[in-house]
Image 1 (cartoon, rainbow, N blue to C red):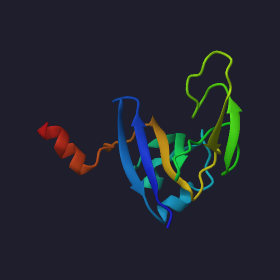
Image 2: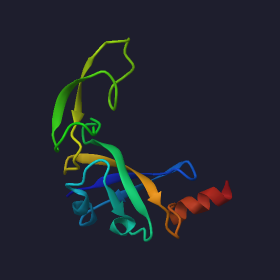
Image 3: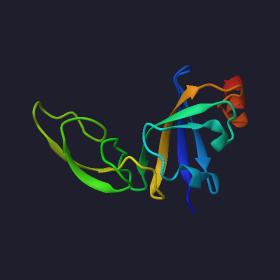
Image 4: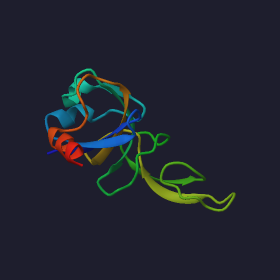
Length: 132
């Protein structure tokens, strides 16, 4: 059973919201790549449009845009996703996951590109915000 944790970042409110995507909806994400957009109807948010910005696999390795395919790979890099801030000119060898979403992906990070009518917050979250 394929399950993804979807982290939705809203640049307008500067808040993030989490949704759990289970089968059969999760199957629609397999094969999508970083940088692709998709309509909110895939996750029952009509009117929204989202951009896939990142994520991680089930072991915590980050998705990286310049590694193609749904594979884990050791790369040598100076900066970017999964790389700390080393001294000047120092290259690091790190393991990262490719840019394609697969069954082994655990989390997908997305950003709102086009806003819909309904709120991203779940009804329980709305109650918590109103009482605070």
